[in-house]
Image (cartoon, rainbow, N blue to C red):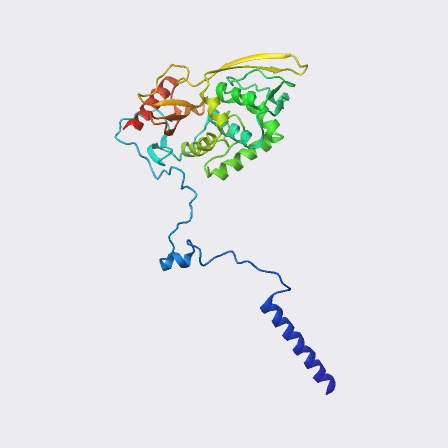
Length: 329
């Protein structure tokens, strides 16, 4: 009988201690509840009508396309697969055709290559070429890099963005990412971070691959991020670039490149009161003729425009002129 009573007393004590632990927690550890009912954007205050603020949305600083918007029909985009024009400051869609259609981007890919490089390396980083820079695809734009050649990231970005050299893209990818494959992973991670959810990169240069695609809208998201870098803006605005890099034996190699953008070359003129700052060109058999631009009006306000898969260069640029004319309307 005594043993039974003692057992009951012990059991009772244990139960009491467990209850205290459950009610008070262990020791003096403070548990922070992440939801604050007093927040101006809490569901309680919003429903009660006392919340005056709104939670920031992902696209609060972005243009959002809800469908095709071809305006008054003055833009003839019948020979292009997709086109968009955005008023960056006012977050306004001035024109859109097939903004979310998946298409090959050709060398417009290199905008992302430059963006990832700028985010992950300094401009004075020394890059060394390997045998991977040897690209044998017919018609591929090359600056003639050889294994062992060295140059800075700044030099490589000029050659990449102005001349669209595919071997320069490989040079950047291997040195910044450790390998081309890892750099491509970095490109896709950055695309996801920017909300470019209809984009898949398979290489850093844009030569055709079934798993390499994007959209006009996703390219706007990527370009909109890239133009936040002063060095990017400076490079895309240059008409020509002359530099010296070195081979594996330290011998100097001279290189001069011209911008492939025909607005900057003077072949085509932007509409009155519009200045083309620069952008990126892209052409492959699969992607057609592509162009992305940063332009400004007379007040300096920025606009981003994209055309994908136009039928020819002499068609693409007049199409872009028509698109930019919408800024003045």
